[in-house]
Length: 404
Image 1 (spheres, rainbow, N blue to C red):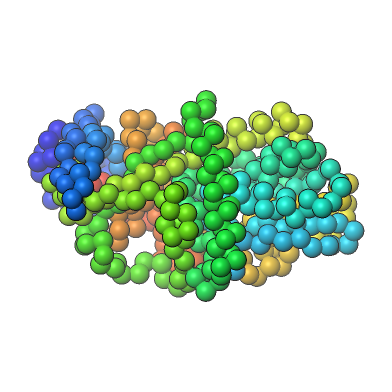
Image 2: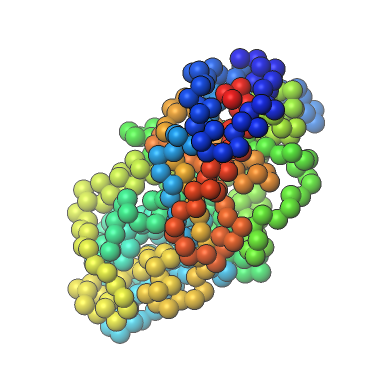
């Protein structure tokens, strides 16, 4: 399929894909998509960038939705709470409030939490919570020689963090700009580097728990021109990765309009890590159990219940649950909704279209399409809004007009 063919039916497709039912009908008519051919990118700024590889179109249709899920990101303006306190006779280390960076920073924040008990002789730990932070904290503790028991009301795949998009986003809603102190930045950079190193050891493992993927950032206006604010009511967030850990930050490469297949004037290409959360979380749980870990189903309504546990040291990894458990109103819910489309193993790239409420992450268990609501910040509702997803899929379909 040539680029001219790829773009030729854009007007028809945009009109046809205006409702979920028409999206489904359009997909039913479509033939098996052919790969969009590679184009040779011209030299930009004196540097010749690699050509755009062949891209298989994403089948964007509402009848390919497997599930629509909503999670609640635990944002704290001050950043994650990683501190030790005494509650009765128990030593409690808090490790929660990572916003949209939980999976990304989990290994680093686990090491930072364990440093807070390195002066103690106890070798048994209780971990409350079995999500991204709880599981990785448990594994780091086991590797350090601790005997670990997890206490949680839910476990994978029924925890909030299982519903995340699964992309490396270590600075996503990690704190507000005003709280990005030099000490916080130093701690964040250390956590990011620890986690990044750990993820590199998981590449190529069975089930592909971690993979590198190309990502295309698309825009209707030049990238140096700001878009109207879509995150209404949210604070200003600091830019951390490109400034503090440049060795982990993969620079976006501009692509000339004639050298990419998308019907937009501006595009960049970069690379990013993707967490295939289904296989990744199973791998974590399997390793935890193989190392002798135990999981006990337990619901905590008050920290007074910590006294009932046999362990003297407790690591509180309850994420958004800490708001109710501890009465911690510093945790602000940020609603996140994703739709999972039927997997397309041949789609090996992600997308972000500025100003169109569209973010796509290619995973082994499906194509993740993220849609934001206007008032997600501060919203603790977990009821799916199907129309948000239908609208996002309609936007995605506009990028592949030849399927109309």
